[in-house]
Image (cartoon, rainbow, N blue to C red; front, side, top):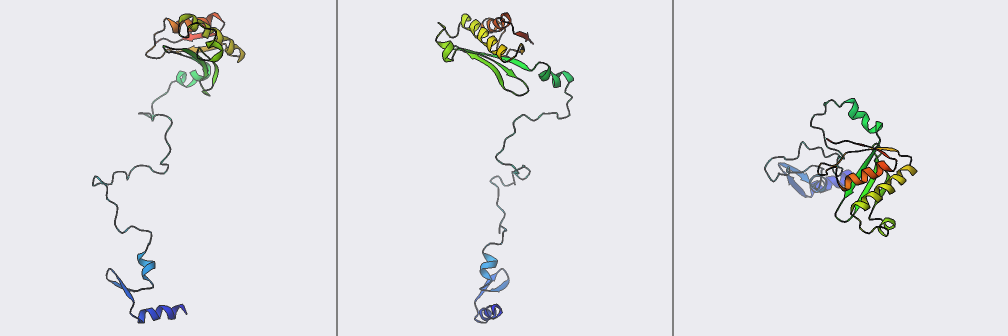
Length: 187
């Protein structure tokens, strides 16, 4: 029956033209509507195909670390094992308003002990939140919290802009005086 309908449309002269071919009208929607291909390739704004070589398999994900400029670069044994040999690192941040210090596990990036003059319990006791007595009290509180978490050694490397003097030295010296062994790496 379908053959008769198709044959009838061909006899009634309902034809469509596609290029140099003549098609019956019943075929027109299936051929001309959408066949999955674009009729013309999209042109780039700059006249070249800009992003052909980009990997778009995962377009909305970002890489977490930097790519190494030299992926075959040798990494020394010390560089590979230092995070496991000295797993805890001290981070001290001093601003004009407050002082904060934390002990972080290098491998898991978890903070083991944190103390800062911005917290409610310490804020009420101190007269000033950013002077040297505040730094000494932060070192004392951090050492108590570190001993509760069974951390007795840590390493400290000052940031590039920080000098190991004044308030930073007061925090580190307070930790050492209260029983936490701190290895200070000065470049």
